[in-house]
Image 1 (tube, rainbow, N blue to C red):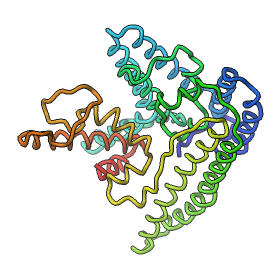
Image 2: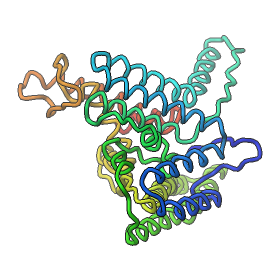
Image 3: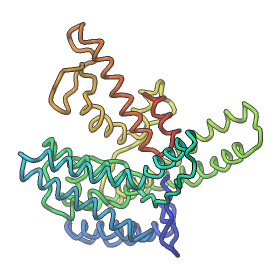
Image 4: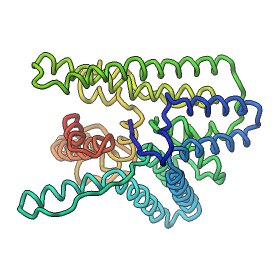
Length: 369
């Protein structure tokens, strides 16, 4: 999961930390005695306390994202004629911030390597930028909201508190899932009543997530570290290490997701499931229907389809509308396949880079394409 150098004197706040448990218990204890509006205010305050505890500067960044995307959505709704302009500004601002914090070091280091290869060594590639926890998640979630307003899939909210909570809701801030405005915002806008069965289910899911993270992922992680730190391990041991690493990553990531979903359910909020036994997939395509589901569907709806999806080259259709591969005319099959291949490669490379700024993630994305 995302790592972050905390503010001096502070420890990183994670879902398995004592600080997170205290925050969740305090919020839960007060939350169900409040009406809807104060509930949302409490959740928003808790979200920013959670984020600012690690580093107060990160809370300012999250607030900046919120202001930019809230303003853009309101501007789009109020001025449809210039809506595309406001959308572009929001996309550039949000992706620009994501690119700077997450990918600037990657590109600078690679540029320095190229210069060194051609004999122009001496370029100082040292670039130390703090990676804000969860920035990939709330960037995509906030952009999805603005795009949906532009596409009229949802309406721009007047209530700044609800919008800010949608972007910064603390259970999902660190590891997702990436939610859509049409699903999550209405939950913040309606009255929520305490249901013992829902709370028990949330607590059970939270406990299962902690078990996957602390018992499965962390213990298998020690085995993986031992295998790959051994000098000259045999082929069989390497395969064991690769297999164990896959289990570790799944248990770690899905464990965090279960903790997030369980925490939200304790507060009467339902978040989307994000994993469905991905290592049982029969193909790379099937894997992406099971792994990080909210990311893969986000990439499909906001990258792949807007790029053209599987439409033949030269065919213009409304954004968001797709069609069967190859169309109805035989002569369209070849360009459709070419366009589809290009769009798939772009989408999966972006998906790989989303997971991390390194060439191994690019290769991972290309493999799945």
